[in-house]
Amino acid sequence: MKFYISAKGIKRVIAISNSRGGGVAGKGSEKATSTAETAAAAGGRRISAGVFLPVVLLLGILLPFLFVRTAFLVLESAAICSSLDCVRWRFLGESDTSLKLRDELTGALLEANDGNESEEGAESFNELVKLMRASKRQDLKAFAFKIKATLSRMEIKVQSARHMESVYWHLASHGVPNGLNCLSLKLAEEYSVNAAARSRLPPAEFVSRLVDPTFHHLVLLTDNVLAASVVVTSTVENSANPEKLVFHIVTDKKTYTPMHAWFATDPVKSSAVVEVRGLHQYDWSEEVNAGVQEILETNQLIWKKYYKNIKEREFINHSDQVQNRLMEVPRPSSLSLLNHLRIYVPELFPDLNKVIFLDDDVVVQHDISSLWELDLNGKVSGSVFKSSSEGEEAVFPGTKYINYLNFSHPLISSNFDRDQSVWHYGMNIFELEAWRRSNITETYFQWLKLNLKSGLALWKPGVLPPALIAFEGQVHPIDSSWLVTDLGYHHQSEEISPDGLEYAAVIHFSGPAKPWLEIGFPKVRSLWNRYVNFSDKFIRRCGITH
Picture 1: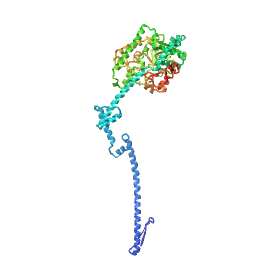
Picture 2: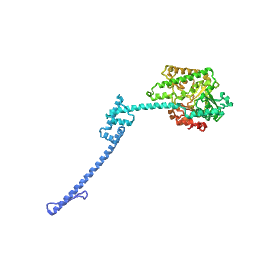
Picture 3: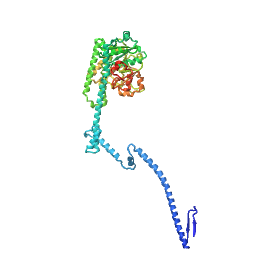
Picture 4: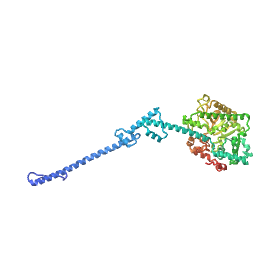
């Protein structure tokens, strides 16, 4: 027998026998066979281990690649794919049924948009679902036309609702709250039964101040008792020298007794002087009386004509912007006859020279004494202009002549500049002596009649448009910090910052949402409420609250 020993480790021992020694050789052969099988098995294990490592390395390379590819695919398809199924379809290069449906639906909607096929729209979404279930046509085209008809029907309903909102808003802005009506009645009763309510205004010792040019004179034309009290109270409380203030309040005959009773029984808590006069108490010349009567009659004719035009129009066919414009123009300030009498301020106060004119919907937040010291450079009026914010040259919409006058009419376009900036009413300085030397009042009347004669083609009814024409070239601009306006409009009350409101010397609630109305905006109403004496017995009896 021969033995062979492997040199690499003592792991294999092979015995080879020759033909001699048969019995022994047989046993040796069996052992050799067993050893060979064991070696073969070990070799198989070595092959399996050698294959496994390359496979692992290959997977380590492929898997990150697949992950990155899938990630890029998902990112690229984010705007189109809304599910993993969609990504799977795109990754495998197959078609996505949802994308195909989208394209078909888009095509059907475009066809419906261009088509004229008549369909009866549904009243609601639930009704639309029922109609589609009951429909014999179950294709996308039928669905698209039904959607178009439903949306058209709903759009008409929305336009109608917006129109009614404008109408109700218009009516609410013209209504007199029960509290204010009650206050006037209670004060009128007080005037008749209480001698103190009928006492002279101002007291005899202060009468000389009414024409003294060394005092600061303020003019207010109003028939609103509560609003007048807020103007007077806010001005006095924020004045550095309240004893120099003289208020001239002019009202109509109906409101004279409650207005007089209020200021007689609840005098201003300072030495400021308040005068209350009714239009019926003025002893004007025949010429002035005729002019006042004419302006009142002219404005009544204008409003009759305007409302007649409104009735003849189909509001539902107008855009929202046109509807709002038509309904917002006849706001209370435009309808008030007292507001139109401001053109007669020089005749109302023949002995005064320089006055501050205040609207009844303003609040004075800071001392305004320095306004009487301003030099107007020979102009009749000093006013804040509706110009762009500081540092900007552009003028905002609604701040030019073209926004108030009809420049498509040759009478307007040939006489005025459409890009001319507009000034504010609300707080104005008037040099009455310079006014008397001008033809402002005559010009105002002339253009008022021309507008009526043209069928209101020159401008929509309002106080400002004819004043812009009459005061053309006679207004001196003053700093914009003196006045913030349009707080009766939602966009302005929301956009202006609280700091901007507090900084303004005077804030003006121009617009339909007056602070004494329920439609007033809470954000800015508090600035007005702080000057209302809610502890007053008449205010408490009439239920006027914050």
